[in-house]
Amino acid sequence: MVQEELISKINVTLSEEFELPIEKLTSEAHLVDDLGLDSLDAVDMLVHIEDELGMKLDVEKVQHARTLGDIYKLIGEVSSDSN
Amino acid sequence: MENVCITGMGVVSSLGNDSSELFANLKEGKCAFKEFPEWRDYNGLSSFVGAPAQEYDASGLPRNVRRSMSPMSEMAYLATVDALKDAGLDISRNGTGEEGLFRTNNLKTSLMIGSTSGSPIFLEKYYEKMIKNGGPKGQLSTSFFKIMNHSVAANVALAIGYSGPLIAASSACSSSTQAVVMALQMIRAGIYDVCVVGGADELHHSSVSVFDVVKASSNNYNDNPLDIPGPFDRDRDGLVVSEGAGIIVLESERHVKARGGKVYAHVSGGSFMCDGIHMSQPQSEEMAQTMNLALKDAGQSISEVDYVNAHATSTKVGDIQEIKAIASLGGRADMGVSSLKGHLGHSLAACGAVEIISIIEMMKNKTLIANRNVKNIMEEAEGVNVLTENVEKSIKTVLSNNFAFGGMNTSVIINNLM
Image (tube, rainbow over all chains, first blue to last red; front, side, top):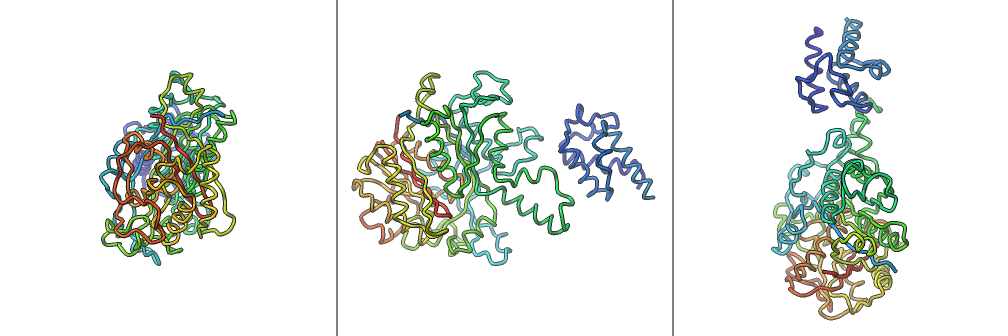
């Protein structure tokens, strides 16, 4: 799956699970300030990404992510590692 | 001794989500029983009837509050908001509103809401996933917050921005009545001025199974639930599980007078006891002892009681033991006895508070609600005025009972102040 497809897929999941308008899900969106996500949501995001994309992201790296773009980057890294 | 007043009430139930609507439906003799055909797929279950709560909407809560709530927390939240509004107490989130009694660090208040267990819906999902995945893989962070035993109380506290003493009274079907009695004792002792008390439970096939395995659930009327015999009927065949939330605001008389609030009634006495004899077989002598202790606590005699709101769930054994206990108390010949389980079903931890709310409405409307669908009163009730028709009369004093597995017996005395 190319990066754009992965991002599109995870955006749909995040939109549904966290009740966020899809248009707010941009690379620049700050996870806390713009999307209202917190530490519990970060844990759940890992579960949803693993469920949807079959990817296991590094917990510590996710905890250090500040924007959705940081999450996309982590997904990209795992994706390229597995290719 | 400090009088303890009922100053607010909120309800989500199978027959109405406010006390007036609930009373109107009870008065009309409506019944909330519905067939659940999908329960026929559960191996070994024989009862396929439940009494779901009427539609409610908790979608106004922020997602980060709702995410840890199961239906029983949502119902309890809505009932709590209504009860606080009814009492004229502030419910602002995190103490940002005006006149906040339920704001941060007000230690003279207590929030006491119990449930039978954590969410049965999410307990099933949690362990289903754990067994499937062979461990915690895939569990959401919020899953446990729905299944912990104080889930309802903690979720309501979070939702209304309450910071203070929190107690999750959990004794199954006597939970909310036990909370009322504990609040009564604590307000009298001067520990709290205001206690918001009650209980909540949600409908799930596993709750029905609990009664089914001990042959206490109705299973002869699966195709025609409205025909299920009511409490104290000779041909009763068991209970119907319901769901909902009942929340009552209890307040010291001194406190409510100081703020100029209205008073519906006094909780003038109460008692909760464990019989220590049997986990599931109700004991009439111990039930009677609990009722007598509640009367003694109120400083009243059975001859003052106008009406007994029985726990009676239409089980073969429970109704007999309770009516024997009531008969043993004596009382006036016109002392009416009824249970609302034939209308509402059995909402478990919520039932005690929902029934007290119904009692307040009976007092307000000067009408005793009769048992529903009683064609032949069971012979063990001879000499007791088991109501088969509503009675219009002034109601001053009511004795209300709730009993639970574990030998739990609870009774409260309510005195009309309207």
